[in-house]
Image 1 (cartoon, one colour):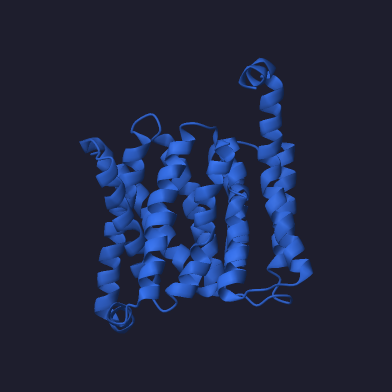
Image 2 (tube, rainbow, N blue to C red):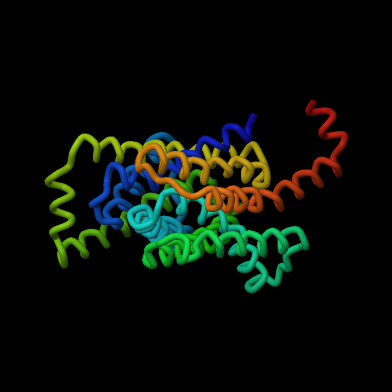
Length: 300
């Protein structure tokens, strides 16, 4: 049942790209990042107030910069420059980059299943992103790569804080601090080139407001809040199975809202990438179940 709950935040995250293109197509990415992060962080703070200790502020600023400010800004660049389905499917390559990061930085060699899945995933992505078969914005692809690295580095920093701070404090304040950083960046950019910012604010429509509510309340406050709540009740491995809803949501929302369509071969490559991203977690989960037969029988 928890895996079904895990699909909820993953699904909302997967709709970010199509919802942004459909409801907020002309809004600056940095402004969208600020409007997504800061209100959501303040909402979570109101739900469960918390205050970091004096020695924790420095690392939270770093985390807010990488995990929220840079990541949210890059996500909205992707949302405004790449097809929704491509963004959703492309982001499931995060485990490959995490595996390489762990290998290079921490000398953690991937096992055979992880290495094989990573190679196949890269091969499928190579064919899917082939310029001869699909035209993609280079800026969007660079933003995707940057967003993936933000996840890998930010997750590593977040994991190191697990024994030092409560998850809710980390979550709430990285959103608030990241939102403040994005707000300052938006003000600086607006002073240099005010036209897109003034146009967005002065021409705000009901559709724009609905898009912002979706991104702030569902994608961020509810999505991240549920994410934290679930991690206290299930393993990270089990939670990753719910992540399959992310690319599926990207494909479906892109089709429904934007009319995106691809060839049968391209859809097959997307499905292949989704499956290969889940194989290592599936193998680990099966091994855990085999090594804990008494636990499994008592749970049933």
